[in-house]
Structure formats: structure tokens, C-alpha cells
Length: 186
Image (cartoon, rainbow, N blue to C red):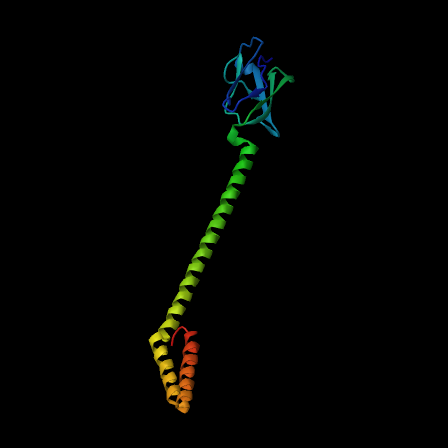
């Protein structure tokens, strides 16, 4: 019944004409059924032309096209064909798209993790720097130099008792200052 000899059609060939060899007077004399997997269109009368069957808007896939005369329903002809998918409808494309998406998500996760880590390091560096400034502000180098110079002067004069008391008071002040530097608010 069919003159079509090709069994494969490209993704752009979604509408296919099947020319009938027999001379048919009325288009309703021929019925067709299009089967794709477990889906079937059911038997339908030809609605296009007496000599031509037109299948429109076919999706990619394997098809079996059945034709029969409406007066001889027990006899039918079968023709198997395939409409190929476009490159973006293939499993390979979906696999590549999934792989690319996974790589992109992984890269974004690594980027944001590194960014968060860098912010934390910058914060900690700033915090340590602030602590050092606070300690330095508590120990004025000029004050420390004068205190040690005074202790040395007392030792030089032979006033060891005053030098020991001064050294004891100075070390207590240093200890208290270091202890207080660990607190955020003094």
C-alpha cells in the first residue's frame, strides 16, 4: 500500500506524507492507526486526500504505521519507521547538561566556601590586630622605659629596698595589665 521507502526521518521531518499505490475514490475508504511504543492513536479515517495519508507533528521515536481499507478491516499493512530526535533531545545531551550543571554547582560551592573562609580569616586577622593595638596602648614604651630607668637608678644609689618595692609594684602592674587585655571591655 505504501510507496515510502525511507525508515528514518530527521528531527525537522515531523510531518510525513504517505502516498497510497492503489487508486482510492473516497478518502474515508482508508483507515490508519499510528502506534508508538504502548501508545496507539486508534483506527482513524483518512481526512487529507484519497491518495495521501498525512501524519502531522510527530515526536521523536519509533513508530508502526498501520493502514487498512474500511471495508476489509481484518487485513492491514504495517510500516515501521523512526523520527530521530534533535541533538538537544538526546540522552547524550541530557548527560552532558547534567554533568556540566553538577560541575557548575560544585565550582559555585567551592567558591562560596573559600569566600566565607577568606572573610573569616580577614576578620580574625583584624581581631588579632586590634588585640595587639590594645596591648600596645596599655604598655606605653616611654612609660616602661622610665619605670625601668628609675629602678636602675635606685639600684645604682644602693637603695635596694626601694628598688625591690618599685620592681614588685611594676611587675604587678604589668601582670594586671596583661590579665585585663584578655577581656573585651575594661
